[in-house]
Image (cartoon, rainbow, N blue to C red; front, side):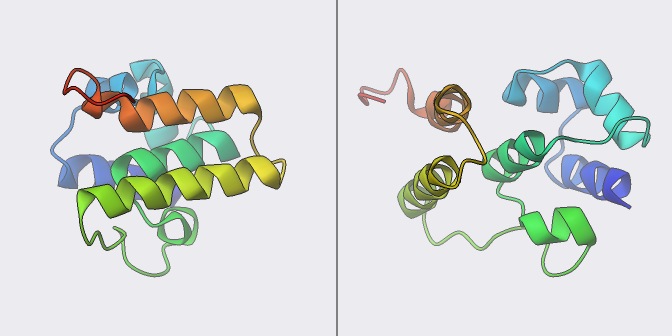
Length: 117
């Protein structure tokens, strides 16, 4: 069940619900509702969650495959995620505004390090 997989990722990453919520800019209550199966996540939530936590989207949705995507190095991972987001925009799955929000969340750890992100 998707709710169980959300819990598995959170526990593997050693996060509390509020940590996940803060990373994604949503409320802890929403995370709680998702993990208890009271709410169904939007496609945007799933995309943002998988990008932010390096989770295999197919695994999150169906339980098939590996939980986490293989990461060769952090720079390649960020570049790959940015390309994925651009593809989602071209396909009409996300809007320009949603792309900007996802990009800001993805690049937020780099801010303050002298990077022009």
